[in-house]
Length: 213
Image (cartoon, rainbow, N blue to C red; front, side, top):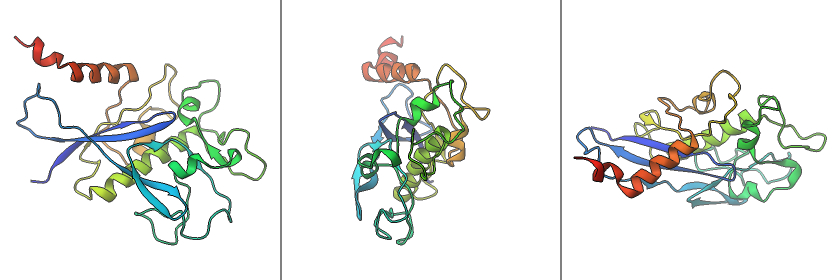
């Protein structure tokens, strides 16, 4: 039988992370889960890809001549590909082409979060994207990174649980699950950040086991 995984994504304003645990039907519900943090391959320099524990939540929108062809391709892309990608290299980009704080913008009801706002105050000629689209790209990147290391059927479509921000104001486009769904995730459980922090505290202090009769 192929293994089934629960996948947790911490979609952060500055950094994002992906952790996973294998699911067993006969597992003790009070036993600590064997949670593993997945190393995320990302560009750290043009032409250099390295695994890191965290994915910086920054997206660089390069100009047509910013990088030689193929130097910003990723392991799951064709060698000649050249497309914007989040990560360590993107974080060092020049301000006018750097998408940052997408999560904060997504939580701000004072703007149309489906409108092309980022990079904020981008110079003329730089195509902008929406906070919703930036979020989708971060999640899609994590999905591709997972699929590259844990190929199907070990994919997020098994049982992904995605911890994403749920602001007090409703997300646009009908549902807060739209970004992860549009990034290719299915069977999504969204947790508010205080709720996720509480679960982590319970897990760390093994309250469930000690409180049982």
